[in-house]
Length: 327
Length: 124
Ligand code: HEM
Image (cartoon, rainbow over all chains, first blue to last red; front, side, top):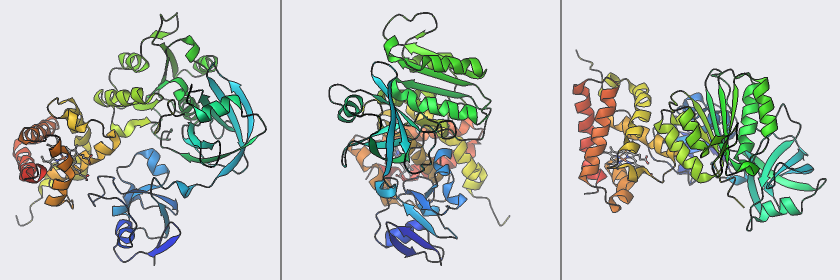
């Protein structure tokens, strides 16, 4: 007999029953619509056990890798522990020591955290960092698990209302212990299709996940062209330019285009809004994989433009929350 | 022949839906007559729903009832969804299939399935 475990309750799966039917009949409010594995309304995640391949059909690769599945077509042969995507008590609190705090430009602080317990994540995912029990914010991970010893975050100071970012910039000190939860998010590099072209577009501290994703892809032997477009209003908003130019020198397939939207662009910089520049340089996005991070309005517009320029929906990854806007 | 392939099988089943979904969704988003109805909804969610729509219109396996179609589009009817919008969707659907090289005779059958849901979609 197969058991489905949800929120500490065990439910026995009946013959031919789907996980969706099993849970909804016992009153678990799993949303659903088509009941035939297409509309993705009943998306759930296995936090224990492996969901059958059939229940993952049509999902983005990054969701498959995190054991997401569609409950209405899930008929597991083995026990599963499951959660809804919005259940945030899935992950335990992890304590971490602040190893260093370093300004990357006038507004963006790199926070390096050493976790007290091992944490398994992918570059580009986010964690939640807590100032206290109830006040936390999501920050993307710029570090790469096998390359960097610790977690790296890029925190932009948001004036005047940014409570958590203000605390990080003004009060937090190396050596202090903080609480984090995570990781989460499906904006990361998935191996396979190593020749595919990648276009990464980011504004402000949206560079954090992209910097992680690029180094992850390169270290996993990605051979296709990788184009990074990082945009800001003026020169002061850009950062890690030296590191990125170093990467360009080391990897023939990596290209870095810093973009300035506000002022005349000096030699070596593109003039214009970052997504305009990107889509001008690469007008046909059929078969490309895209990563879009940063300002929510840029992400929204760029997602639509990328899709209309030929990119498949399944190949467009965007950070799920408003990194550069959240306070 | 006693066993005739279903419309869904003749079109190519799930692979055909996968081939059609991006093309169809691109047409819908670029169609000024209807694109406003698809704005403001998360694009990933929307793409999955387009797949549900196509599976249904292709005569594929689905569990939607007329009531589901009523309830699923009621918020759009409130925003003014009418016959002209259904016409536009069926037109975009036909253009998508033509682009994929599907025979006119099958396209007509797909249009007929979509047509049969018109009153439910429009809530009357
Ligand atoms: C021609 C007949 C039509 C059929 C058979 C049909 C079918 C469907 C189906 C199966 C879904 C997915 C429902 C779900 O599982 O949530 C859906 C959703 C949707 N349909 Fe239609 N549809 C039709 C016409 C239209 C028209 C004319 C419009 C607007 C111009 C439209 C706009 C939408 C939108 C915006 C959604 C997503 C709603 C949401 O966000 O939940 N549909 N439709």
